[in-house]
Image (tube, rainbow, N blue to C red; front, side, top):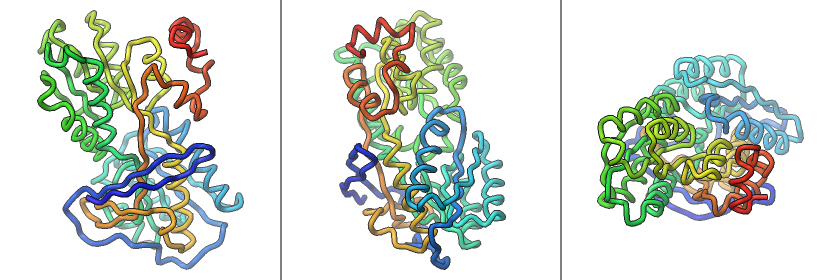
Length: 366
């Protein structure tokens, strides 16, 4: 494992970054920069995002990346965008289209990290460098940026233990992990288990197909039936979307227990305010998007990534990928004002709509 600390500035927000290598398997090294001829600011950047059910991609990632590319290219760089809507086959077709359209560089947040491998190779063969965004895609990627995913899981697990306190072993928890096709989900799960194992009793555990809230809801209904509603003391949910489905099932069964989350989605923040959800993981998207855009522009222009990516990460297929990993923060009632509000992610009026107004007032969110 390699790890280094460094800082990325995104507007007024400074975030400490840490990077680490992971998988042991390898089939070669990542290129330090594209073999393409050097270009000026008039570049074409392809952006492929995985789905549109999670609010972050359309509200934050896409516009932040587009804005940063414009800044870095004197408004001459063009963004070509497509969303795979959680369909790995569609995303592979979208890569083909990007190749046909002769983009200069490709930023890919993969639906399925393994299924994208051959398409990444095709892009590479066409002379198009690839930046893996948010998920560590397989294939000969040139750069990678995401969050420290094991730390995300540890942060969630630690928060759940805090919420449970002396009740941690008085009953059973349910673990609702993310999709088995997402390498991030495996890292979240690993980090959570490192914190939770031996300190709680895990009654049921699921890998939730496609991260869908409705699938998490069905899984939770099954867990309640199998474990018994009086025996459930808490739920580890890998993200906010699933937490919403889980909480719906819990409420229907008359259960109120701590539930974790991730992504600081508006609905998740509002559930934290109201007490339905205990916490989320705040992942500042601005520095992640800025790193992706900067690496993409540098690769398209034939520049070195040394000034941006200070460390290396190993994927299952490629060693020593130049990388930027962004630190995360536990989000609870206590620090909503100092995180998502302070950083301009949401305004207090957006959070504290009618039904949440009294709860906001109670915790001093005014």
